[in-house]
Length: 102
Image (cartoon, rainbow, N blue to C red; front, side, top):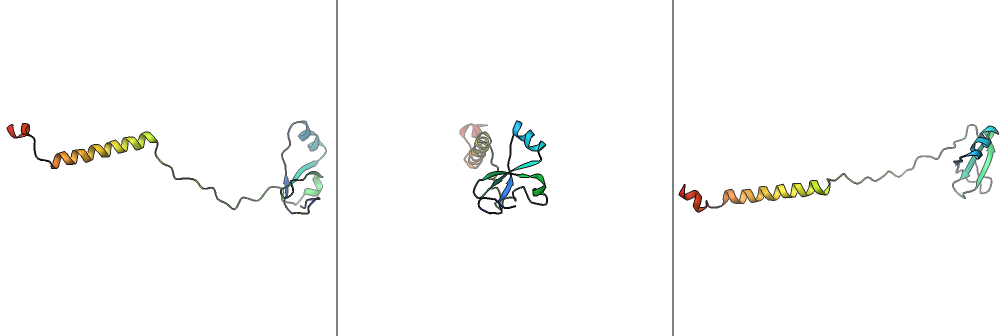
């Protein structure tokens, strides 16, 4: 499908709503839009048969950041790590006086 203004092959269906959508569908007219020059126009339904009227999928893939833990989960993990490190230091230290007396 070519745009009547710029002759680009980037013409796709456009969204219309309300009473305009009802009138166009009753008259078998398709609303189109050029993605090159943004020209909006209408064509009879028969002229759009066999044409691709939906845009092709984007070549770019969506970049999704890796899922990370919430602030509370990271804080809890840090505190647990800090407690385990402190426990290791106490286990390797000399026994206190109270432990010697017993």
